[in-house]
Length: 240
Picture (cartoon, rainbow, N blue to C red):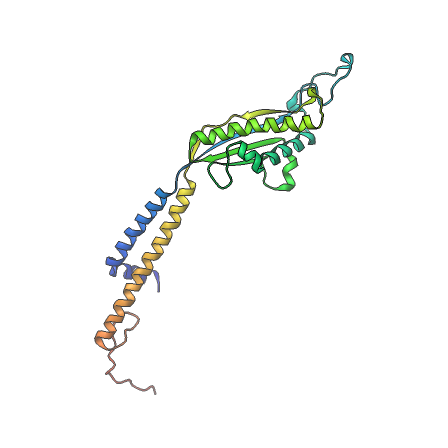
């Protein structure tokens, strides 16, 4: 059936199409309202070395020149970032930050990539928290920053690293104000609307089929492709 024939059917069965379409709108609105709005807060951290470098000077007379931490990045910082990311994604650390598995809020900690092969290529740590409560989303990010500092300090202490060489975490982007996220609600509403439109079309064609079947029973003859009735009593001429 072509496009215009479909339009004709929809208008002919308007008493079915219109209620079905209104019902689809109602279901779409209900789906949109049923999904709660969530809020996202983020923060960006970077690991840096102390200004005196990564080696503790034992003799003050041999003290080297001071180094700009932002000009001295290496694989050591990248590996330390991986350690922090890995530690913060454990269930134990999640509980410390107020995150329950499968509940609200949720948190994501990475170094800019979810690919395990590229985890050691960045000294950054990105924290993303999402919650139905804007205040809770930001609080989780603040707790995550505190835990990141504690994890990094604990790892260096366990390795007996000199205190003067401790890697530190610099906050590049402080916890951002929570931003409302409507993408999930819009996607769910779009899916519901598409299903409603398909249901409207199906109901219109179902009503058309039922109407044609009733006409066939009333006239006692089959209907042709245009909906007109054929008379079975007319003789069929044989082909030459």
